[in-house]
Length: 127
Image (cartoon, rainbow, N blue to C red; front, side, top):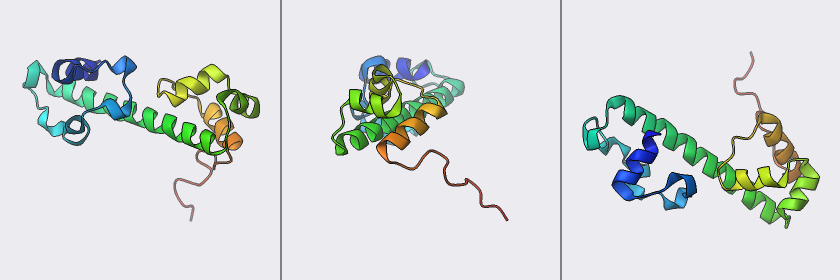
């Protein structure tokens, strides 16, 4: 994983245990400084870093959103499990940004949290 190599070399961040707030601002806002040749990286490495970092940030945002929605309702993870039929361990991994939940899991969580289900609105308006 190029992003792990880059962040370890530049900022000594362990991505396996990092949270989106652990990322340095210059990494998230100024990736263009990481050009081919920087720290021996190729353009392919830079593209992989961008893709992996985007996925990482999206997973963190999803996790934060689920946790905030759950806490606003005053629910524990176990209570959300009972309402959603999603295992507590999976909810924990989602909230930590470490899971790749299925579409069905996201729909179950959205319904239990009283949120619009993913893709409940059309992506493209029909004519």
